[in-house]
Length: 403
Image 1 (cartoon, rainbow, N blue to C red):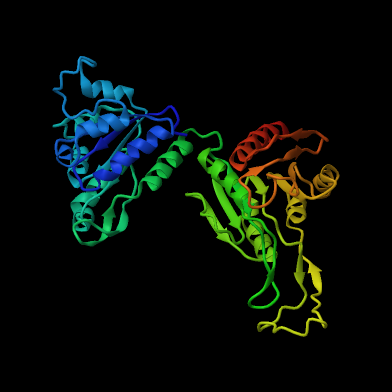
Image 2: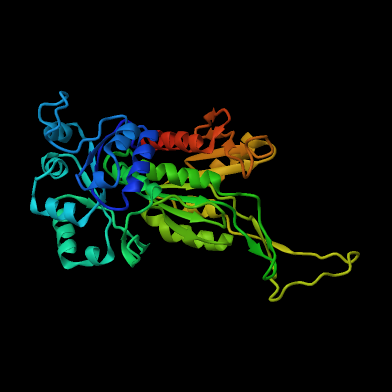
């Protein structure tokens, strides 16, 4: 969402300025063009030359620089920007913005630009919680500014409390989500995504499960969020970190996943059920760890069938566009097409998990999209992120045609 964006990064004089250097670098790697505007106090911490080299554009400090590039520097920057971000935003620059002061380049650009403005406060805890600062932030919010709340933790001044500038990946995620909610093609849509496998206990120590890592479902959730959707991610056990701004519901068993899906189902527009659920569960679960027995005796575990989540969702379908996944090792197309019919799906993503690069715990996948009209679309091997993007493309197309 930040690719091609023109971002003015305002940098004020706080110790957290070192993060702003990395922020410029990360924004450029995402395809944004960045121009840095520094306060005089900021130059006491970091040289403008460093920001100039990292951004690829001259860092601006004063309106009185004779650049020969713009006749009126603050107006040119104000018109150029798609987004203005102040990080770190000190108590001083927040007070200036709230009062409408324009006594340096950054405060003047803030006053002049019509583009969206985001401030990331960073300061001592006492300064941040001071009623004056809180009143200034509330004034800025009323005037259309977006405030990214600071983290709490150990600050450079030795105090533990709120006022710490969030880490750069968090700021990037915030900017991406902010842009997605304004411009993303999925804004206003509500997605329910399931991911990873489920586990059925045998005893307090052991379980029956599968090899699913959750990578495919997490990729779908992440892509939907980046395009502006509200996402509920129902996930089985996984070592992956959920994407920022997803509503995460963690479950373990198939029944728990079904309950979570049914709770969210009435309010969602699109369901992408990428989880690899356990189809069977032990009939009896031991209260205590089962001890080893004579190898010749063996052990028998009687299994009962779990509820079919996808079939249940299909039987309750109203406005939802329902997408299933079929992980098969043989008769891929036949089995997947049967699931589309039996489970009342709008689309299914089928893959042969015995193929190299298409199974569990891989970063790539080889899939086929099947539809109720019998159409089959085969994709070459690609990253799971790219599969997620293609999948969302088709969901939008088919959903629009269905409506």
